[in-house]
Image (cartoon, rainbow, N blue to C red):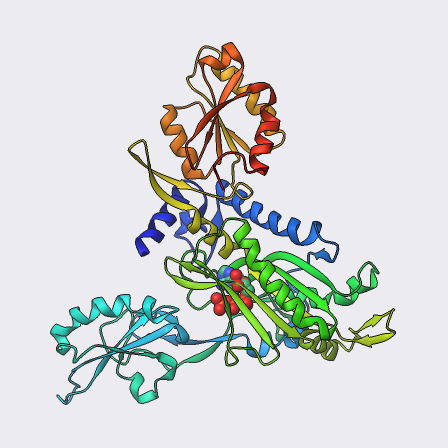
Length: 506
Ligand code: ATP
């Protein structure tokens, strides 16, 4: 399974979807750049989200807030006090881990201490789930057996945070071969700090936002006062967020700079459960409609022990990535917690007056909070396919047409006899409406393969017959089926193909 991820990362690099940030200087952990194809993919995804949730609805307005806000916002939201993860350092290797992502495999290697007394050694692995964390310990158990003795039986799995200090001494860290190198867990605030203005003093400290949601709450009154909205209504925002993640991993899945697509949907308190149910279903269906159709997409309700203290219901939309099943989006019923906090900290009235019922109250809110980079990664994983065409192996990204970076490629069969000229004219015409690509270099089969790898849904080929009867060949990426259409109406034909169910793509 990990192999699948390696192949995807290498395709993303090779074809210009995603690069490590500042790579010529050795990169920087947790930061990624989107190349020419990647930026189109992510933009298409964000635009689909914006169109479906803001522009096509009557009950939603958009917002674009600043990344740095008054630090009081983060006191009110609880981020200054509590937005932290438990962190563990390895004294030997200087590696830093999130303590909740260390699982200890109590293989019980019969180690011997410095006094020659028998003692125990336990192996730690790293991952969001025990299965993910098991990979390293399984390999290491065999290797360390020579030094410490054979394991005494099958391992039991214990989360690191549940171990007592005495037991932590027995643990061999994920990147070392010795016991007792891991420190006690310490709390680490994930917000990036900076200074505003010329003086670097405590009073000029500000934070890069760790989520876009608080900007929405902070503007609730402004949006209300513009007078366009009536409950129930939502405010949507797409933008960058920053978290100084202790251990960024799994490609773009956990980055330190990422984009969120968030909605705060405000409603009357007694209607909040219904709206929660609505958004839980609607948001799941959105991913399905855009092509996450396999059983790798899941909806998981939080149990009572997992809920934040202010939330009465939360669900995660999860995707089974090759590295494990993880959250793409959270949908939370947050009650009136956020508005009341900001009311308390700002001293401003954030209540709503219902004109019809002559009632004043603080609305309740449902928050569907998604990550644009995680969604992009899920769509890449879902699209990645290796299959055979005419006995030849190919790699194809089967993106939904709406999010495909390039919609069609225009290809003259050969570089002579007037074919490039006709192809160029078609390319110019199509380019006015769609993101299309022109390619005349190399054998046609190779050019098709390149388009398959880029996820281009259609290729339009201009051949000898095109010059005599004015038709061109359309090739469908997924089925490789080909058919001829008149070049005269090609622009409409492509629009229809991209919008409709014609052809055998998704
Ligand atoms: P996790 O438990 O994975 O750290 P979270 O529960 O803290 O995530 P939220 O605070 O609910 O995440 O953020 C909402 C969404 O923002 C997530 O579902 C995810 O899509 C995205 N997101 C959060 N942190 C990151 C990150 N470090 N890198 C990329 N996307 C992220």
